[in-house]
Length: 506
Image (cartoon, rainbow, N blue to C red; front, side):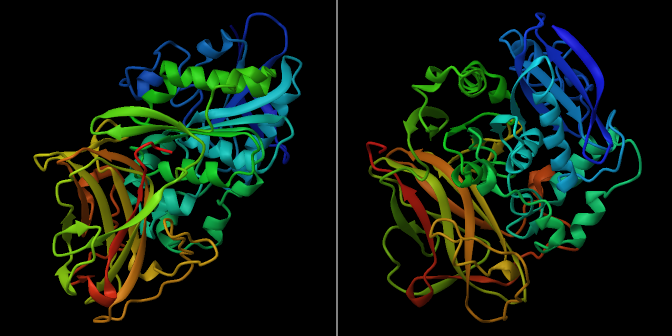
């Protein structure tokens, strides 16, 4: 393997972005896999995160990036770049802004015009590196031939900063201190810990960081983790759905945030995808389905190949909220239950699979002018114990989650779908205390296959501080639901819309 370190790549305004390039020993031109991040292209993985069993810990491994040893052995070059204002790259830090995306565009174009390159470049990586791949692909650099976006958000406001309008303080504070601050090369640029709480609405600051998914036309492989219920899952599904690519594949899996990308099945899928679109080996994806889903049966998974998500033939059904109950029949009488509340189905008498996005239509009367809704969906075993999903660090998490700040309840009828309400988040509309009000809560996609005797639970809670680094508990922005009631039955019947999959899974 040939290694060139700290190579300055000129960008359109003349500020260089520094990169490391790993190439096979022979001098023939090869396709390139590129990535960029503010995490430090030279920071050895085990020095930062020594865990994760599936990750090779050789001297060239860097957090969330393609393994250069593995890929050069298979005829690819790997390029890692430091974001402007971090690591070896000078300049002003402007994370996820237009200049950040343009820098990656320019790096891709540089890589595509080197004598050691075939002119075919792919973006690949996990999390932030995938997010930057989405951003650059929407700018359509001519030498970008494919995009591998593995667990990477596409909507900065809705998926990273303000989920449902609730500020994600726990993650952003932790992430900035752990991942960004150590790599900064100067004081220039925004500190999101101070800036983002001042941008509560989806304003020009957030619009500058919005990705035009419809402008993405390159072949796409989107890797979504069912357990990524707090950051990336929605983005991988939305990105795959809305991209204009003729050739696009979605794979939804389970496991930690890191391990799956480096597992044998995932490397094989990535290799076959890139061999087709960077090397012209068209047959390599002949037996790869457009959509491959790990269907969760308790703690086990069964893979299903299909053509779309939501799945063809999905039966959208309403699970009505009652007095602690959840059922397909409307409650006989109208009443209210105090918030917070828990609603369980009766033990099932037949198997039930729910795979796809979920939506909560919640009628609520509040005692205050605003409040935060936290919705969680759980799978209960025959003894009533929760069967948790695998979270990003291997921790237990709910099977699905959703959020909504009540003052952000307005929806866009042009962009909303019954199973995925779309909130503009561009103004606050206070609640009228004492007045029943409809809140349409988006719950991120899920997959739950329940066996006879098991139950589904909807849990509405007032806060999520127990999630630690994923908590929405900024002291000045959180609005706990105090004195609110949920309406069930009658004219203000609340329900959970679920995607019931036919027995054959078609």
